[in-house]
Image (cartoon, rainbow, N blue to C red; front, side):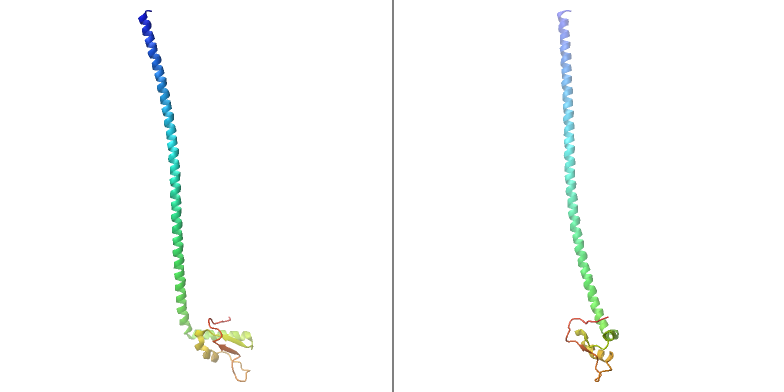
Length: 173
């Protein structure tokens, strides 16, 4: 083999080795880039999922706060309306009671209750307390309840008095 052929073989061999080294470096670089890309994608995915969890938690927390505020507002509105309804019912009841107190049934109810008390008391002395608003009925009640026939002066075995008790009528049923 001649020098030129040797030189040519050496040149081919050098080019072949350089190409192989170049291919190996290129392959290593590609692997490193792929690995770096995979690591970056994995880190980006982790960061994205972390941020998504944080944002989701914040949204859920905000929604829970909004729901709690709205629930409290609704409860307050319900309580307000309940109180309005109760007030309205009591106002209506007071009007009905005032109207009922003007009827003959109310006077009969008072008489029946006093007679029941007298039956229970069995000739003991009884004091009946009448509400201030019923003072006008005292004479009617005295005339229409059972009288004690054993007393000489034919007075009642009880006293109807409106000055002793001023707030409510005490009625024993």
